[in-house]
Amino acid sequence: MTILITFAFVIAITLIAFAVINLAASKPNGNILLGVTLPYDALNDVAVSEILSGFRKSFIISIVVFLLLGAPMLLLYENVPVLTGYLMVWVSACAYTNYRIVTKHFDKLYSLKQEKQWWVGERNILTIDTEVSRLKSRFPISAIWYLIPLIITMIPFVWMLIDAGSVTDWSVVLSSVIMLALFFLVHIIFSKSRTTAPSEDTQVNIALNQVFKREWTKCTVILATLNSLFFTALFFLLRVEGIDFVVSIAASSVFPLAMIMLVLNAHSKIRRERNNMLRLRNEEVCTDDDIYWKGGVFYYNPNDGKVMVEKRVGIGMTINLATLGGKAIIVLILLVLIATLGLTLFLS
Image (cartoon, rainbow, N blue to C red; front, side, top):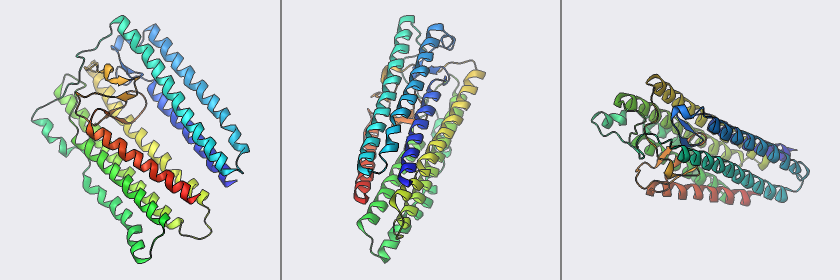
């Protein structure tokens, strides 16, 4: 029964995550819709509304279909290897289907934009290089706060120096350290990122970028702390005899749920402030870099030095795959996934 509840929870979290991402994508972010930059007056165009309606219908149908496809897992709960394999295929298929839905409607909207010549401002990224922008280092949350998750992460390490740890113990500690390093790297990238200019008013740009950097650096510090608490708790939980590993995995589901909520909160605050300021000034986003977005999902712009940028579709940030830093983050993420998969297979 515990296994059944765990897998049902994973299915629910996956579908909820995709629903939240797609609902966010279907709402204008300033004058950006489905990852495409449009003039404000084009947002209410009939053809745009039809594409948006088709997008919403497609992702609702996909959620229903994958909910039904998840039902067979209820019959496989006694065969854990088969159930695990089915779940991995199910999640992969769900992610790929969602990606195809997004890219399909991004392409439709971008083609409509080209047909109607809805170009917005300069077709490149504008940056502010003024004396005031050098003060941006005051805006983010200080990296000194990473001492808290670092101390928490060191607790299992010190414990293993006293009482020799097993392979499982070292795997948990290693995963914790890699994740902490990843959060710290992302924090530095946010705090040092160049100031972008969504408005023609320098003061508005400074204010918006202050909100952007502060919210995301605060989010990464909280996530890093929760990550360290999770792995430290998992370390001691797995050392207790009689504790079912599945119970540990079920308990760990709290972390990804908290992660989604924190990222959604940061994204919502930034988007709200941005939309309010641009609306008060009756301005559109003054850059048009749609050509650098592959299907509205992947960002590849060799002319942009920023490692991370705001997602065009969904919530949160994405990586500029054209930068060295972006490629390094991809490698780190792959290492974390490999370590997590290896740990799961070992403990199974």
